[in-house]
Length: 86
Image (tube, rainbow, N blue to C red; front, top):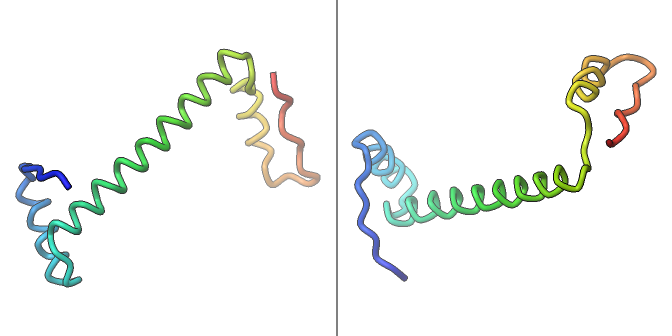
């Protein structure tokens, strides 16, 4: 495990301290879980963005105007099919 010293805004530090008292968890455990959640979420977002950009480069996807027009018809009966991929 690596020791890391960080500076937190007073409001965040106070919120962590309060949460620690309320849950009985250490402040270190709360901050570790928060950082893990952020890093995991950011990594997934970046991977999704990379896949989307790869699709664009390969010419896969949908025209934005077609998608918006399709979304405007959501809830209509009968339900409209999604626009074709380009």
